[in-house]
Length: 289
Image 1 (cartoon, rainbow, N blue to C red):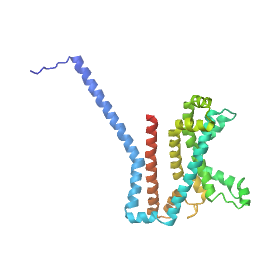
Image 2: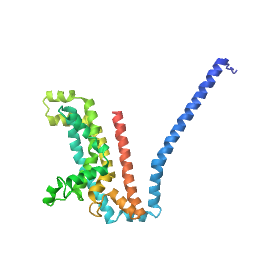
Image 3: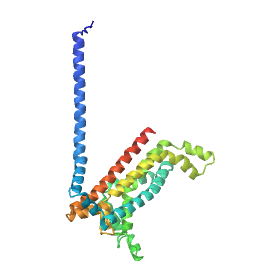
Image 4: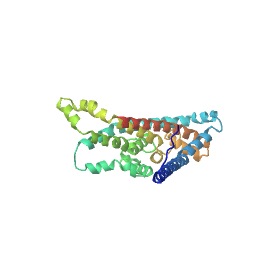
């Protein structure tokens, strides 16, 4: 025997508005998600699909032949060398700077710490012009090197310096908040137990900052691979000498070799996708830990 459920008029009114509110909330959520996906598609997915389509529409063989030219291989190799140099040096110097800012007190500390963010505020093109003034053949410092027949600008050293400058903040800014939150108690306890400064750093400090350090290194790699403005100014984009992958793309595009430009761009896009996924992995690991 079925029981018939009855509701009062007040309960029916409450139930109606409750379901109506839930329906509006659900609709609003889906509209918001749809707007985000549309905006993301317009800015990221459609341009990426356009690169892939333009690259492969003439066949995979053409794509491989454009990537396999001596100038393209040299550009990718030069990008790799500069990236490795920037990552190694900025990892070491960035960690040292972060430890000094977090653990030491001195006059001008706040000003120096604010200067770390200068590459974020200054255009890379402006930074390149700054380095030409400093290290150019007639520059303030470059004239000394020029007298010793050491070329900085329009050569590999200048490109390395420019990349170091634009990637300086990443490791520092990822480690510094972690060090401040971690505090000094465990480091002081290790020192009290007789650990040296190096052992304290290696066994206590480094494990506490490892995910922030990995995150900063990943961002440094991504920025080094995609750097264009500062490197363009200080390198001169000389084929088979000072032309990186991004400069190669620009050069091919301006020469109307669109297939070559899109081929190199696709390789960098794949590398960026891999780096992006690795960053997401590190972010999730930090959240779990």
